[in-house]
Each structure stands twice: as structure tokens, then as C-alpha cells.
Image (cartoon, rainbow, N blue to C red; front, side, top):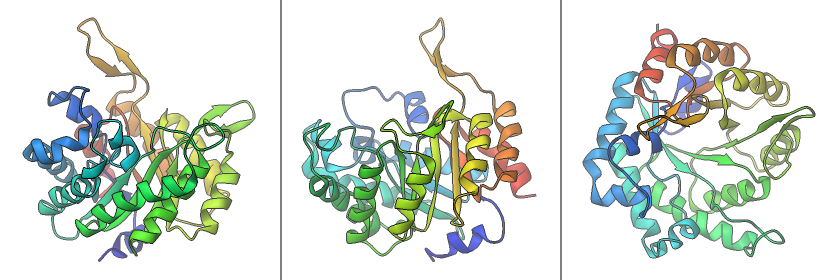
Length: 293
């Protein structure tokens, strides 16, 4: 069944879910523990978020495992629970997955740097992602989405760890910033460099997420489409976060404005679309209304 998601991209636009972190905050999550701890401590809340996205029209949802690699969990003293927390993340989403829908295993960055900028080696990164992906795959996910990658070397390490752990389709989204010279990651990787290197590792799809709003993402997708024939993924932010007078975080791009440019994202070549930070089931429902019509 895992290959069916890729087959679906050849028939129509595939709709992912929106933000997980912003939805957890609405449910009362605060820092101190990793969001993945709620897979065990508050599983019904995690399932309810997935359910709302499926109800809104998502073809696939992503597991609550974005920061679930061993290195990031290690900062909370939970590295030994990496496999368990990721397997549980997968099981929660798969438990409520409707027929003909999909669950993707979310793998985010470690938050650390490889040598010489940091103390970690590629081998240590590969091992950290291997354990995470092992838990996700054995928990039943249909594909792996390595996302929000700002360092191409780390993204490749994640791909290698995932390939060691499973035979599932692996998709990778980098996060870019626009500059007068074009789009680059935080570590200075260009769009062309990222696509060429990732394709050499035989991934199943690529694209971009986070940082940019949907208007900016539409422009980036056009640039990326010129450089790859792989299924292209785009998950923009709902603008930028702002703190209001009540201390709440609000994002600058409304659902209506987001969706207006989401149509342009698809016109410019995205095969798989969803939302990132600040998007919620309302954003997904508005996109589903014309994707599924």
C-alpha cells in the first residue's frame, strides 16, 4: 500500500496535513518535555489532532515524531525511549487512519551541527535517524518524510539512516530562505545542489517546507520544478509568528490568503501540498474543497 501514495500523485494533487506543534500548543503543551512524550502520556490528544486533519480532507497525516531522533531526545534524557516513542507515534496515527488514506513518518533535524561546525559525525547522525525510522516503520507508517532540513549533509545522513532501517518510500523537504542570489538553506546549500545530491541517493520525492509563506513558496516551487522530475512537495508556513497582547502566538497569513497562493503552488508544479507552522485543519479544509472537487 505504501507505493499507492506515489501513484496517487500521478492522478491528482495529494493533500497532507497542517502544523502539529501549533495544534499541541493549543491543547496545552508547554516546553520542558519533548512533544513526542505525549504519544505515551496523552495519546488521545495526538489521535484527535490526526483525526481532525483526516476529517478536514488530508490524504495523509504526519506522525508526532518531528524531534524524535536519539540526539534530540537525548537533551531530555530520553534517548533510550527513541524506538518506543516513534513506534507509538506511528501506531496512534495508523489506529485512526481511514481506508485509502496514508500515514507518513515525520523526521525533523537534530538541532545540532556536524563537524567541523559541531561535535557530531555523520555516523552518529545516521545512527540517530536509524533508530527513529526503525520505530516509525515497525509502527506501520506508509512512507517517511524527512523535513525542515537546513543542512544538506544532515539530510543525507537522515536518508541513509532511513534506508538502513526500512524499505519505505523516502521523501525529503529542505527549508530555504530567499536571497537576492536565489534560495539557500541556513548552511548555504542551493536548490540545485540539494536536488542533485538527494536524487543521487534515490529518494522518492523532494521539496520544501517551513520558513516561507504560501506566496513565497509558490515562487520557490517554480524554481524547484525546473530542476527535478520527482514528485514535488510544498508545505508553507502561515506567514510569520507574532505574539499578541494576550501572549498568544498568531501567524500573519490568514487561511483565505494562504489558500489563494496554495493554488499557485500547485500550478507551479507541486504534486503534494500541505501546511507547516501556523496552519490548522481550517487551512487544510479550504484546500481540500478544491483539491477533492
